[in-house]
Image (spheres, rainbow, N blue to C red):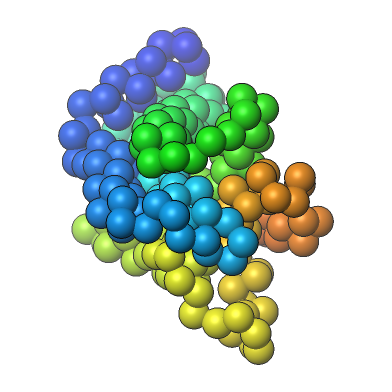
Length: 243
């Protein structure tokens, strides 16, 4: 099996998973319209609420999208598919790359759908700003993508779904995805600023009002990725020894 064929196979597996669509596309869309429709003219921390909540729900859908492949990895391990893959000429890097490409395609779909929803409620950005916002969000969810891989290689299938769901909800809660922040100062606020999700939710404000993402946002994302990638490598090797 060539690398391109394997990527197409992973994409087809994703397309055949309606539950993934419901969580990554349907749920954020319903929440966005349910909350933002009645607050179209509200200003939230200097940003129009529809823009703020559109960004938040796009983050919510993207986080679920990039962590979802972890469940497929766990299922593949449980059914023996991972074992079969390891005795083929297909390289482990190709398999991981295929899963990353797939998860980002779903994340792009989630962003596009929420951007259209935001535009329908009056969010107006230039083409450059839309692209900048999408780019920030796709870069910012990279730590969640690596976390999804780690959980997929470490946890059994029956524990993976609640683990991923709980993880995304915690990131969302402490990042302000649900339309409110748990704190605005003090130790808890410092913890919140150490999470990628906090800066992801502020990406809309950074794009429209600030002109750029703060340096702390880039540092936070980079530190998470640098720390998690070696953990993901170790998790894969540990899983390979068990197969």
